[in-house]
Image (spheres, rainbow, N blue to C red):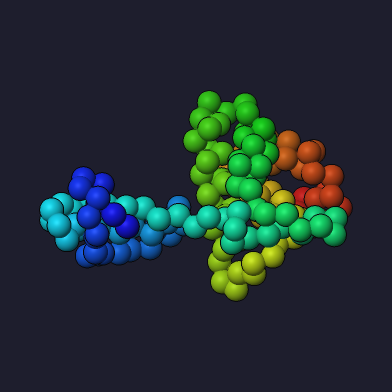
Length: 141
């Protein structure tokens, strides 16, 4: 990575994995001007994860998951913040070892439903109504 101040080469002086938001926090120092700054590195999920749905494979789009969760949480005052947190939690659960690079769409829906059920029962019921395939599984219990 280049320095944000002078464009020189940087080195990593400290690094930590952030569990909550699937990021890597890094403290960097410029070799030229000696400026110190912090960077947050995030995995590009659309290139790392693929979703199998109806026999076809598509890249994982976290924005689609966020939109579905936001629709389920639309009655809450903090719907945007809650939807962002739920989306982050679902992605974190999907990436837990042993994570596979190819995920079934149903697995994403089931994980999102479980997280929503713990957060908000009304949102969980709205999410189930939008995903009829979940109603036949044991997710409703």
